[in-house]
Each structure stands twice: as C-alpha cells, then as structure tokens.
Amino acid sequence: MDPNIKIGTDNDEILGIIHTETLLPGMILEADAYTADHVKKIGKEQLITEDLINSLKSEKIEVLYYTPHEDESQESFKLIEIETKDLYPGISLKGDAFTLDGRKIVGRDDIITTDMIKSLEELKISKFIYKKPSYTDFYRLDKAIVSNELVEKSVTLGKEIEDCVQKKVPLPKKDIENIIEQLIGEISVSEAYTILNLLKLKDFDDYTYTHSINVAMISILFGKELMYSGEKLKTVGMGAILHDIGKILLPKEILSKKGDLDPDEWEIVKKHPQLGYEIIKKQKDFGLEIENAVLNHHENYDGCGYPLHISGNQISEYTNVIMISDTFDAITSETPYHKSFPISNSFLAIQNLSGSKFNPRFAAEFINLMPQRLYGRPLITQNSYVMLNTKEVAQVIRVDPAQSLRPVIIIYINGKMEMLKYPIQVDLQIDKTRYIEKLIEDQQLLQTLEIIKKK
Ligand SMILES: [Fe+2]
Ligand SMILES: [Fe+2]
Image 1 (cartoon, rainbow, N blue to C red):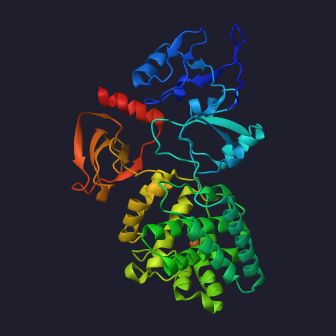
Image 2 (image 1 turned 90 degrees about the horizontal axis):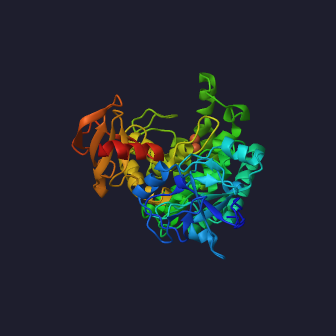
C-alpha cells in the first residue's frame, strides 16, 4: 500500500484509509481508527465484532482513517498489494480490492474475468490493494503450485509439441518426460494448500497447451493424493499433457470460436481423441496406457461418451484420473465456450457428474482429497450455506468427513424463495432425493441469510 495516501484533514496529516465495508468480524486493527472529524471509533488491537460493524454502518460511517505504522503499515491492516499482471481469469480475491487512492474496483469473491483484467489495464491501473480477512487462514492466493520457471519451460514444451505435430515429425519424448519429472518433483502434497499459478496463462489462443499443462499438474496432484508413486505418476502426467494433442490438427477457427458450436463443428471437435491416438500410436514408445488415455478421455462411465462408447471398468484408472482433472480445469477456466465456474462449485459439478460421466469411486476421491489443495479448505464445513437441487437454501449443521457432501442441514428457504416459518432439518445421507448443487459464497447474500435466520 502506498504509505502516502493523503486525506484532506485540517493539519494535512498523512493518513491511511479503511473502508467500513471491508471490515470483517474477527479482525484486529493494529492502529487506532478515526472518523474524518477525529472521533476514535476502533481502538488499536480491539476485536472487531459484527455489532461494531453494524453500528458504524448505522451511523453511515463509510471510511475510517488511521496513522500507518512507520515501517509496517502494510502488515498492520493485512493490506496486500497486487499487480494487475498477476491476476488471472477464474480466481477471486478474498477481500475487496481498491486502487491506491481508495476506489473499490473488485468486490471480495467476485470472479476475475478476462474482461475485468482488460478494463483494469485500459484504465492503467497496474497495482491495487486488497484486504485479506485476518480471521482465517483458509484462503491463500499467493502460493504457487510450481515455480514460474517450470511453468515457462512447460509452455515452451507445449509450443514444441505443437510444432512437431504440425510438421508431422516425432514428438520430443525425452523433453516431455523431463518436464513431467520436474512437475512431479515440484508439486507437493505436504503444503496445506496450493493454487494453480498456471491458470494465469490461460489465453484463448494458447488454450490447448496451457490447458494440457494444467491438466498434467492437476492429474499429478490427484495422483499424489491417491498415493501413486514413480512410474504411475509419470504415466498419468504424460497421458494428461498429451490428452488433447489431437486438437492441434483441428481448424483454429472452430477451437477459438466464441459461442456455441453447430452440430457439424461438434462432430469435428469430437474427432480429437482419435486423431491424438493416431499421433501417439505412430510413435510406438509411449505405451498402451498413454495411448488409451488419449483415446478414451471423453468416454463416460455410463457409456454415453465418445469415440468408442466404452463404460465402467473398461475405462482405465489413469484415464479416470485424467478425465476428472480435464473437466475440472475446463470448468474453472474461461474458454471460448464458457465463462469460468468458481472453484467451489466446480467441485460440486464433478460430484454431480458422478455415476454418469465419472466413475463414482474416482469422483468421490477427487471431492474428498482435492478441495484442501485447490480451494484451501474442505468444501463443506459446519455453518456453510448451500443451495440444493430443489433450489432450497439451507445451512450445514453437521458434516461427516467421510461423506462431506451429504451433511445434516437446516432448510430455511423453500424452492420458491419463501422463508419457511418452521425451518426443517434434513440428513442428506438419508434423504437422497436432495443434493447440494451450489455453495453460497456471495458475502451480501450470506449476511442476509444470517439476518433471516435470526428472525
Ligand atoms: Fe479432449
Ligand atoms: Fe482437455
């Protein structure tokens, strides 16, 4: 944060600014905060409560001022400086973001889109600050899954693969193995969390290979969570990085088309597993497992996929790991076909495809193991608000860790958006007609729900 934010006070003292709407219960400020007319409202190290925030709001106090610490003003308020170039589509900031002169530009939990980044760049906003909630360490945005250096090497390899396919020369197998080995070396499951830094590379033009590298990283992470080691991880990583290789041979206009593809165009896109398989098969040394993963990554557990319509156990273990990682990356990214889903709801989307698209065993493992890594915490926790398939809104009151997506809930709002006079408790392990469709994360909505609940 710019320590020289200047507020027009009487004595022209140099002050920092804090917006009431960015205060969160549980925060502690490390300096006294005053109104514009010098009335102290929050003491240094005073715990901020909901009541305190509400009373500031009822007095219509929108901003408070403080004297930044000489040398650690950033730390004091947990204001984090971010550069626009570090944003990437699909992420959300866990605090409101402001320009250095205090204008709010992105709300907490708003999903960052390509358009949003473009407009910040157009406005020449290269840097801004955001307030990280200090009451929880669940959310971390700043931990990269692999080093930027390795990301760059992977992208160079992606381009090399594309070149080889277009020139119809053998793929650089040694280089691919080398990158996969480095990814395996760097991707750690000992971290409490990780966020994919590769997501920022998602660019429509380069989508196929940035997507492929992401799928390799997610598959390796998933493989590690499944306790795979050595050769198994390597096979899964190789299959993942090559899974969409057939797309290189598809017309660029179709791959980068915005909006819906027509049926003929879909038929062309659906050829990529077979095309990829032929590329890999020609070069005999990749092996059956990798060939199968490339050919079968769009097959479905229920037999409704393509190209061979195989099902169930005919789909290999490696292919299952890659299929889920592929879908997860596709729905968390912005592509020409669609806007990105928030990470949390992407996990639920995987769950909701369990038994149809995905083998339930692998879907369940993904849901149980991966949110801690890619979302920074378990998906459903006590007190989470959720929307069900019935469009009812409920709060989670008890979670069984072995079946975390089937908690005990209390329904407060029915499917017609009406408040229930008598909220109902439901155990989702017993009532299988209902399931969680969405996690409610919109802060304003959450606050409203809290108020409704107390009535
Ligand atoms: Fe594909
Ligand atoms: Fe894919």
